[in-house]
Every structure is written in structure tokens, then in C-alpha cells.
Image (cartoon, rainbow, N blue to C red; front, top):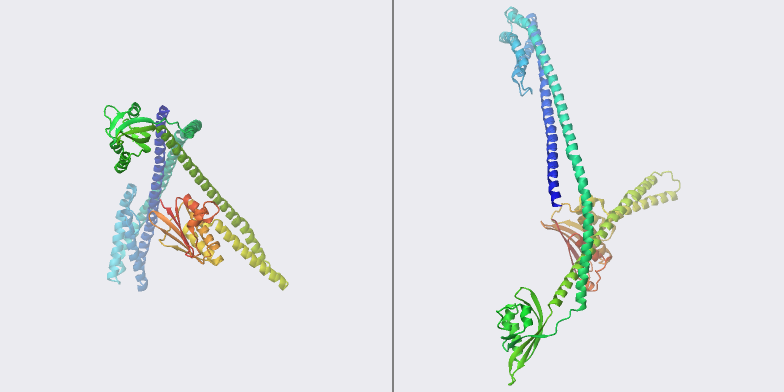
Length: 605
């Protein structure tokens, strides 16, 4: 079995490594794909801005040429002013965009990272750009300095702009087309990379399927078969051990019931009146496994065995006064084994009628004591086992009750509740009633149906509030207190002293709610209370639920002595059982005429 385990262990470790490598490969492919896609998206945004801006450069260069021509032909001052402003604005935008396309501009969202091809194209049109920019700047500067500057003075610059514009436009066209081609190339490359990563991911998945999942499934199937076989062997061995244990238990019980036959009382030793040993019997020496060194005094020896000195002194005084003593002692022999002796100490007199010696007459009852101890241990284990079985059965019964309550509550809410709601809508849709009697009947039926729907909802809530699984014990107890106050003469208040908001295990919340429900029902039925307070508080270790009322109270000790709380069906018995089921502690404080307080402490860990 050990060899088999050693051979299987590397296989599981190998599969685990394959699985981890495959997961890392898939994660890496996903991360790389996302990085590339995000990078492409950012580049696409930059490319679209660049293409748009480079196209705008063509338009601005044409606008500059147009404005320059108009300035040479227009003599109307107002028109000339507007054209000059248009030329100045177009020149500024044209220069900023030209610079941004080559070096980048954060305000425009352009990185300025161009390929060598585009940089070469910009270099080719740079002389034309400079000539046009210089000529346009001189025209703007001359007109701003003297608006009446003759056309002849700026005609040379106008002609320079007109000559350079076609070459500049042709160069910008090549740049725009190159930007577009590079953007399409990036899209194609991204598609190829995505396809490559998809192939890798599919390959990794196929690798997992062939070398991880299929071998794992086979290994798990084989392991499951071995576990089933081991379970069968274990069940068989358990049955055999149970039979052996039962036989052993019965043997001990029979040994106890037969009442082990004790040896007759035998003289074990003779001592002086003060307890000094004078003679030892062979049986005593063999039982205690004495060697050459033997005890000198009986009372000193018993004191060394752990008996009280004052008690031994009283026995010594009894012997001196001529009174015998009998009892049981438990000592340890030199081998370290326990020995139980039934002892008679009998004083003897000399011819002068004085106590001069003492006889130690004993019988060995070690075997009987050991049988009794084993029997008591067996009975204790049997009782503990029965208690645990009873607690387990009680837990199953409570869980079954909760499931049945949930089912009934769900059926009432989803079944009967929906039918009643549909009937209510149908009744409310009836308007063609002729007589006053029929109208009154219809009105009464509607009111009665509303009461029935409200009662169904109340019963459904009491059986299993849906909010308990959704929101937890605190909101449900708060709502429970309000609902009880509405439908009864009892004033029920809820207080969350420490602001407890955490969720608990489902069975804990269910049982705390049932305990509160049971305590409030007891206050209504038996305590004749007018006010009930439900309080929740907590610390780092425990949650405390306290339900107190101002009812008539009762004599707790008297009812406990009568066994009134020892059977199921009684409210306080159910409360204690539910508290035990969730490992909680239940404390009940009550006196006649002083009300009742039930406190439940539940561990939070």
C-alpha cells in the first residue's frame, strides 16, 4: 500500500505542474492580447487624429493661398480686414499643426512618433513649407504695420505662396496616404497576432485536455474505485471490530456480574503495637514484590503510599486501645502496579493483657476492582454515546422541521397567496352590481379577502420569514416585533444594543428566530405579559439574545424538580434543545410576579 502511494504521488504532482503551466499560458495569452488591443486602440486614436490633422493641413494651405490672393485684389477696407484676420488665424493653425505632426502635442493628443518614411516625406516638403510660412508672415506683418501698404509691396510674397502651394499639397497627399497605409498595416498585424495568440490558447487547452484533464479523470476514477474497495474493507473491519468490542464488553460485564471470587482472608504480616513489621508472609512478599529491602513500619509505609498521617495516627490509637480496624487500601507494589487490599488490623494481648502485637489479615481484591473500573468506563462510554445519538437525532428532527416549515411557507406564499391575490383582483374588477345588498356583500367579501391574504402572509412569515435568508437575524427580529405588536395586545420591542450587523450560519439564525418566537408565544399564552423586549448584543466572542417580559413568572426550581422541562413539546424544553443544537448556553431567570428573562449566548467563531 505504501509503495503504491509513493508511485502515485509524483503523478499527481506532475499533473498539478502541467495544470499550473497551462493556466499560466492561458492567462499570459489573455494578458498579452489585452495589452496589444489596448495599445492598438490608443494608436488608432492617435492615427485618426494624425490623418485628420494632416488632411486639415492641405485645407489650411489652400486657405492661406486664397487669402493671399484676396489681399492682392481687394481694395475695400472692411473686406480686406476680414481677409487679413482669416489669413493670420489660418497661418497660426497651419504652423502649430505642422509642428505637432512632427514633434507631438499633448493638447492635441498627438504623440509625434512618425515612421522613417513619413519623416522623409516631411523633410521633402520642409523648404516649401518655410517659403510659404515666411511669405505669409511677411504679408501679415506688413499689413498689420501699415494697413494701406500697396499691393505691389506684397505681390512678390503672394506669388511665392502660389508657386509653393501645389508642391506642398502634393507632398501632404503623400503623407496622408502613408499615414493611412501604416494604420491599415497595424490593423493587419494586430489581427495576425490575435490569431496567433488564439492558436496558442487553443493549443494550451488541447494540451490540458490530453495531458491534464483526461489523465486526471482516469486517476480520479481509479482512486474512486480504490476508495470504494477500501470502504468495503473498512466496513468489514468495522463490523469485526464491533463484534470483538461487544464480546469484550460482554466479558467484562459477565466478570462483574459473576462477582469475582475473593481469596480467603490470610495473615499477611505480624507487627508490633506501634506498627513495626516483625514477620512477612510469602504471599504478601510475592504480591508486593518485596526484595531484600522491606518496609520497617506499617503506618510509615502507608504514609509513603500517600495516606494521611492524622488518619493513620487515629488507626494506631484504636489498635493501642484494643479495637480492631478494617477497611480497603490501595497501594503500589515495587513493579509500579496498583494493588487493592481488604484489610483487617487485629490487636493481640500478652499474658499481662496488654496490647503487644498486631495481625495484618488481608485479602487481594485487585481483580475485582479492575473489573468494576472497566465496567464503569464501558457504562460511561455507552451513556455518552446514547447522549450524542440523542442530540444528533434531535438535530435531524429540528432540521427536518425547518425544511418542512420552509416548504409549507413557500406553498402558502406562492400557491394559496397567489390564488387569493388573483381572486382579490377579480373581485375588485366587478363594478356592475345593481342592488345595495349586493354592493354591501361585494364590499364585505373584498374586506374579508384582504384579511385572509394578510393572515396567510402572517402565517407564512411566522413559519419561515424569507427575509431571514436574505438579510439576517437582526432585520427579521425587528420585523417580528412589529408584526406581533400589530396583531396582539402585547407590546413587543426590539433593540440592537451593540449594532450587530454580521450574518451567522443559517441554522444558527433559524434557531435564534425560533427561540425568540417560542419565548414570545409563551409570554402571550402563559405569562399574561403586556410588554416583551427582545435585545441583541455582542462582543468579540459571543452573541447574546435576551427575551424578557413583565409577566407573572413561575417557580423554575419546582417545575424542574417535577420534570416539567424534560420532555419535548414544552416551550422551555424546546428553547434549551435549540440552544444546545447551536452550541449556545441558555439561562432562565424568573420569579413569581417578577417576569421572565431568557438569555442565549452563542459563540461567534
